[in-house]
Amino acid sequence: MPEGTASGPEPKPERLFVAFTLPEHAATAVERAIEPWHEAFPTMRWTPKENYHVTLRFLGSTPVRLVPWVGERLADAAGIASVPSTRIRGLGSFPARGRARVLWAGLDDERGALARLAGSIRGALAPEFPLELAPFSPHVTVARSRAPSDLPPEFAATFLESEPFSVGTIVLMRSRLRRPAPIYEPIRTFALTGTN
Image 1 (cartoon, rainbow, N blue to C red):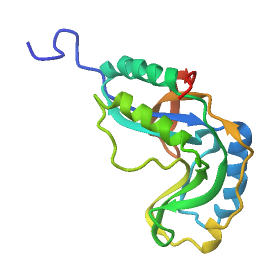
Image 2 (image 1 turned 60 degrees about the horizontal axis):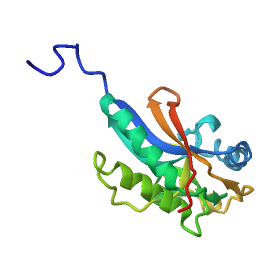
Image 3 (image 1 turned 120 degrees about the vertical axis):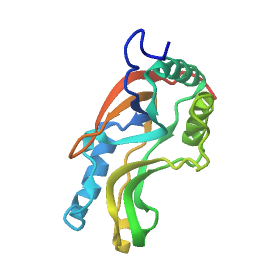
């Protein structure tokens, strides 16, 4: 019998990612730093403050049947991950200042704790989500544009530095694409309780 005929069609896959959110003081620091640039780049799609987050692993279109398994694997990873400390520091762009399509706020990771956290999550999910080749670069996306923009040097020179904060939890998020901005819905939150 064809798959799905006994119990109806398989549910539509969900667009998922694993992230941590910013404390209010850090999100406010980002918002204040980028506000003067809104007028300079009106074609950019600016990220609402409530959507600020740091993606640790983008899963993309995920079969609903895998969601419980993802939760189990993230719980295991969170159980051995220590609580990293970081701060927001500086603005930048991808891929380069002269043809920027993504504007971001960076995060300190001098001791590599955020990279280790991202690596453990990627490893835990690798059986169903192949390891990414690109190195992890902790950042908060603050704007996107389909057309590349030529940023002035002053953009990267914008002062932005938050007070330090600890990352005590990670969140499995569902993304619903909407205009003018996507809606992010937390599915499950995991406390970091390990010592690695």
